[in-house]
Image 1 (cartoon, rainbow, N blue to C red):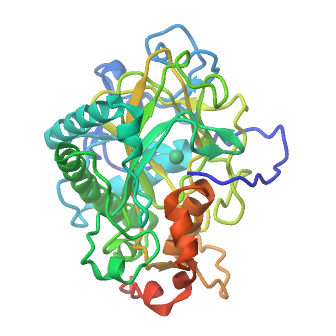
Image 2: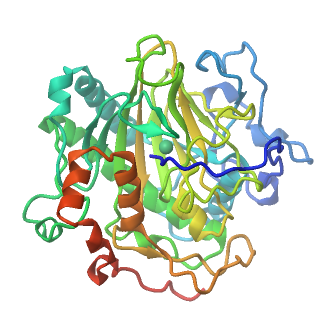
Image 3: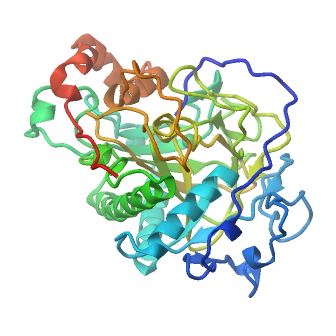
Amino acid sequence: MTSLLRPILPAGRRPMVARCLMSTVAHSPAALGLVMPPWFGATPAHSSRPAVPAPPLRPKTDGALDSSMPPGFTAHVAHLDTFKLPERVTGTAGDRAMGKALVGAWRRDGIVQIAMNDDHRRLWENARAASQRFFKRPHHEKAKCVDAQSYAGYIASGEEITDGIADYSEIFTITKDLGPTDYRVRAKWPCHGPCPWPDSGMKEAMTLYNEALGREGERLLQLIEMGLDVAPGSLTRYTRDGWHHTRVLRFPPRNGTNGKGKAGRGIGSHTDYGLLVIAAQDEVGGLFVRRPNKEEKFANWKASAAGLKEDANDWLYVPPVEGVHTVILGDMMQYLTNNYLTATPHKVGLNTRERFSYAYFHEPSFQAVIKPLEEGCGGMRPDVEKEDEGIHYGKHFTNMFVRNYPDRITTEQLMAEDRYGMLDDEELRTMGTPPAAC
Ligand SMILES: [Fe+2]
């Protein structure tokens, strides 16, 4: 999800290569729940990391790691940390160490991998199968899956724009599925309405998977709170009745597009707008991310980060790893932490085969008004502007969707009924209590 303005940054800057070393944490990789993808072999990569930090990059070669990289791209291949989350986060020493390690990994790579448990694997397989069945339907059937009240439903390939160029992604968006008796739907709150499911099978598969991802998102936020040294609830207080949503994605093969976009480009460079994006991808490959760089504070909520550095030569390719979720950070995490954790720029390339992925957005409540944390963040006292009146997440979300879908029936109705004006009502901004004292 992107918008159209493009701030100007100085060219030719080198990416930051400093990193938070795992070796600063007095726990073994196994104790931290770090697991290795198959190609790491028997020796955890961290055990052999040198004393002098070096990014886990590898130039493009003909090896197995990058064999799935879409053609026409030059990128380093990411060697990512994979974490096995605890079933429950209770504040043990192990939880705190994992929180620090997660935060360190995001500050170094901008992305981490979370090992799926058996339930996740089953739910992802079911969701993927449902996604494949849906996208195989004829266009006229898919095109019926829209709703005038919510932005849930179908988006055709070439319909979404990033930095002025059509994306080739074909999407089914899932927002909070609210029936006509829900008081927010009756009151005509913007973006609130049903999800126009094509059938009950897809509804069940996606809903069950999203519920599991929601639990994973909450555990991640709890661990991040520990990693940031902020009070419990500093982040999770915003996600009560969170406005979590999903983009179920299909990318055509690079030689099978409708010609509306740019050759080889699936989705242009952008950052996402919330807290966490937990994603699953099939075995085809196409995701690229940029590592955090202190020269690149994009602040997408002020001016769009769409298209930034899209053609730079220092992107990281994220190869598909079976049995993991990838997790990147969004704009609200950057805003909350005053740039200590930054939103992860990412883009998608088209491969030689069609590709399916699933991006779950773990978000604040629609009503949340978010303010930057005033302490924590690794001991750094953030540079908080005391007059900062915060970001109303519901307005932030609505702005993104109105900008991305100006011609959708949902935007037309939102404007025609002046639902947009309701975003300034106190009722739509009453959520959140101060976190408990440290
Ligand atoms: Fe994205």
